Each structure stands twice: as structure tokens, then as C-alpha cells.
Length: 64
Image (cartoon, rainbow, N blue to C red; front, side, top):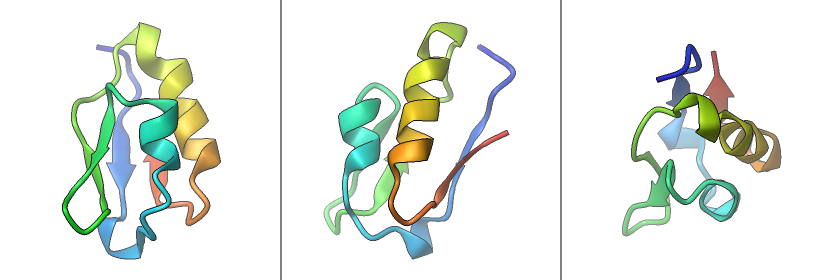
């Protein structure tokens, strides 16, 4: 696992799905369309996680 950790503000998610499009191995959406983190990124997945963070229109994804 990389040193990067994904956190999300599920209550602010608008269900745009850009996270899933950019990193389907890391993100999914529940039945209401709200973001769900499937796993924390490996070093190889970090670029996709960052792409998802930047693509989120509601800015609910944070990588630390």
C-alpha cells in the first residue's frame, strides 16, 4: 500500500460518478449513487486515485 489514503465526504456527494470512471478498482457507488471507497490505493493505483480526486465536481474526495 502507498502512503496515500482516500477519504470521502459521502454526505456531500452528488453522484456524478467521475470517481468510478477514473478509478473503478478504488471507487463504486451505492444504490443512491453516493461514492463508496472499495480499497485504499496501492502505489500503482495512486495516479488513478488522484485523477478521481481531481475529476470530482463536488470535491468530496481527498487524498492525504
